[in-house]
Image 1 (cartoon, rainbow over the protein chains, first blue to last red):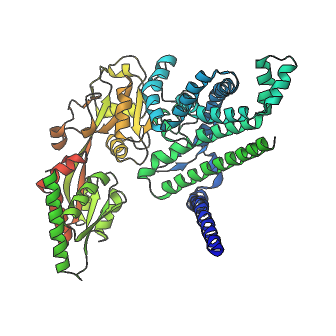
Image 2 (image 1 turned 60 degrees about the horizontal axis):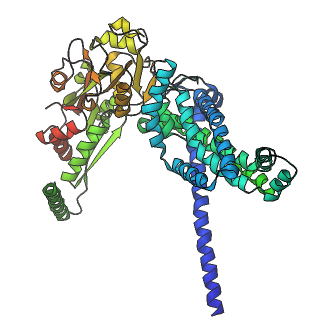
Image 3 (image 1 turned 45 degrees about the vertical axis):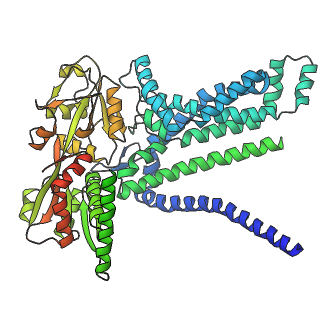
Length: 289
Length: 269
């Protein structure tokens, strides 16, 4: 009987290990595949002309494969989304975690999770039909599909990640810290910004990094509002992101063009890896704090 | 619909029975090679063909018109696919063209745009950025917004080669589907774009080119110039294999007209 029990234990352990390995296997497979299929084009084009070339014309008679416009667009677009999204998300999180009456908190939390559940193609569609014509009319430019439109869409899309993670971090701040501050005569708002927020800063940093990761990896929604012309980034110009560069040309591509698209995916993958490393760093610090 | 399905099932059953009858015989194949623009139409035809002839394998290799023509010449495929007419020297080298369908490309603008006719030269000038304001074309004083397709798209390739603007178009937006182009043009009064004629609906205005409005008849008789033929290329003096001949007959038959139309082009028949 005892033996049988032990056997079951071992078996179940084995099954769990196997399931865990499947995930690891997927990551390894994707990593190896991306490196293997992404390197040949970089070798043929040359690392410097590929990363720092300003012209992308993949099907021209004399093709050019420079992805600097895509890299810069992704960086600027993400930075813009963070600039708009973080203040809104952060202050919402402070309100939800510390100030909001329970009824309001329930409604807002529900709305935030709904926002997180909206598929990106819906963000794109609403952006395409409302935001793009709106920007066109507001700024009197010939066409509204632009970096600005993408930034606004991304800013809204990253709100749920920022709010949820920040709220969790703020709620984990020990009640005693705040009590001590209040007892010393600080007002509640002073307490939240001088005590709670600094105590939760690693968690809030993790929220921001998570937002960056979400913004830089988004393809569908930005493809529908950014215009997709491979220009150097400018706020009111049509631009192409790293993600959309891969997505928009993949279906009909061939030869070196297709290989170069894999190389773009590899660059994007490296960006995400760096962001993940940063995220892990902040999360670890937040646990230790 | 149900009856059709049943018929198909019956046909498949009969074919399967016929197959077992000649077990051991090698499966026949039809290989096609060429134009990437013809992907959709040839895919639809190939699928229907295989459904009706379950002993035959149909293959399509999307390499581009030039490579397709070369492949049939060198005997590497049964039927070459080209989205342009054969040149005289290609015909002289022993190739025959059979037009399968015509692909009409509509030049579309917002319905409120007062411009309704452009010449081919004006279209080329607009898309290469030599004309940038609608007032130069008799429209209102507004900057022209160029909407195009992504690199590698068959429609883009067709449009640019007909208007002679290869690699020279200054697009404001490069979108990834016909539907996206139409939606975008319908939402911007100053936009101009191009889309497969069969996809154009009421929400945009298709311009006439050199005075000829695009429709099925003008595309078929060639008077609407922004169009190109989809051509089946075969060897003049060599006979097709049994299976290839069967596909050729099917693709040019009355039965295929609806399938071809469904793929967004005008059947030549």
